[in-house]
Amino acid sequence: MLIVKKFGGSSVANRERIFNVARRCIEDYKKGNDVIVVLSAMGDTTDELLELAQSINPNAPKRELDMLLTTGEQVSVALMAMAFHSYDVPAISLNAFQVRMHCTARYGNARFKRIDTERIQHELEARKIVIVTGFQGINKYDDYSTLGRGGSDTTAVALAAALHADKCEIYTDVDGVYTADPRIVKNARKIDEIIYDEMLELATSGAKVLHNRSVEMAKKYGVELVVRSSLTSEEGTVVKEVVKMEKMLITGVAADRNTVRISAIGVKDEPGIAFKIFNTLAKNNINVDIILQSVGRNGTKDISFTVSEEDLKEALAILEEKKEVLTIKELTYSTDVAKVSIVGAGMLSNPGVAAKMFESLFNSNININMISTSEIRITVLIDEKDTEKAMIAIHDGFGLND
Image (cartoon, rainbow, N blue to C red; front, side, top):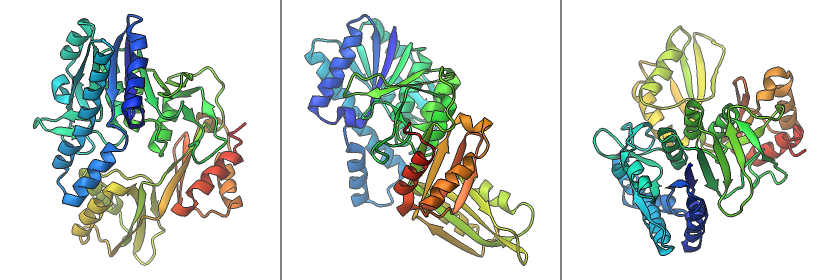
């Protein structure tokens, strides 16, 4: 059996935890399984490297940031290989160059294109545990590109898909997927099974348990995921295509504070303007989420939309540069906002879900700025200060703790 195991930064934060991970992997190895281990950088290493970069150059080129950030994972995998060897278990650490994990050239947010599996298969045949750097690939210029925060999950799924692994286990500091972040909603409940589509919506909406692109890839290639704790032996949450349980009305609540609202004020009220604005952003790889357009008055209208906080500066610069062509009279933005979402396949066949959500917010005196929906998700934009209160109100309103 081939097992891919991914461990997050908190799971390898210090010497004790590195040895804990090593022992867990050796258990499976000694049962005769082939084991691939994917690691994130230790603890808060990535944040510390970003702070260091900021102190040197607040506008550092993204290529150089990726060159810096990929060192975090290389430290993790080398130390982990040393831990295995201390137990007399053969192991080898490999980075994205040594595996040849090919990705796109978008620094800071690359996507995998393909993985050359020969080196890994050769090492597995020699009965070694193979430890691979997460979060990184190599692009067509032979440069490192990182996959975005949480990208080690995507590395694990990509390897599991490419090598047709029997299991893909994602280990973290929580013991599964919950109905809400248990650090905020104290009575949140662990979910035993969840379908890909629900997990993808939760991950995209701010649930930090899994990287959204890892779920997207798992669904595409049919990789069944298990999310579990690296610190306990508890059974985790299985993410797969079909679950046995009858679908609940709502599966979970998620929040995303990493969002900003941009408003293009006074644009011409004529066909094609919205297309020009969003096409301009799309050409620059800026993803837009919630969109709200006002009713036209006196030949003009306002268009508001949300982007991730890291895209704010670039989005404003692009729109400012093309202000005249896009007929924008004024650009404003707010960083004091957050998205709160509910997700559940059950809402497809149950009317009144949105009303229930809005009632829960009303009862807690929380104002809604913008609304977006999909078949299995409803998202509202609210003031950031109300985020935790909103999550608790919605979670209780739908009785998710029952």
